[in-house]
Length: 223
Ligand SMILES: O=C(O)[C@H](O)[C@@H](O)[C@H](O)[C@H](O)COP(=O)(O)O
Image (cartoon, rainbow, N blue to C red; front, side, top):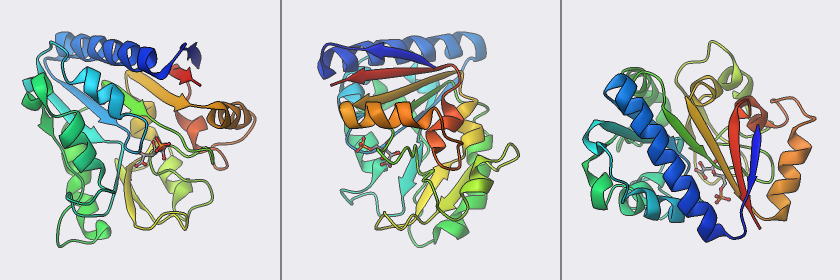
């Protein structure tokens, strides 16, 4: 894990967007295509606002959420809505989006074909992750039924999670897929999350799921 501290959130967003653009260009150069998984929630929006203007071959980039709340895309809770509004615009509007939510299906009915779609992208070039103060990342929440399977080395690409702390079921990329990303960027703001990350270092992934993706991970922090 590499810790990068910034004087403010704006500087962090600009820097992380530039680094991710470089990571995507590297995967595009090496493989001819690239795939990125991005966090939802309140943290990544400003990074998306900077990243969407990056000059790169977006037409050969696949964008997906690291996890999705099982809500329609017009819901304010939808990560797909956030990604479409803030990342898939400007130059990045050329990118291909791989949405997880399927109207009319329960998450357990949608997950098998979604796993195939994710598998078809090959490995992730980039994972842009957030973290909760409970040390969850994506929708890998501590203490949630199914977490052990979602942390396993032989986990499928995606898992359905039903955290008690959340109002809706989630579909999440599993730890195996996120951890294998060529470049991992964890973005956290504030003292509480910095302390939670420090706490996580002495805990097993079952208690601190963020631990499952911290190897070679670039952590970006601002107050
Ligand atoms: O769907 C989501 O909410 C995210 O993928 C989730 O893992 C998020 O990164 C953390 O919960 C932090 O959320 P904030 O950025 O809102 O603090």
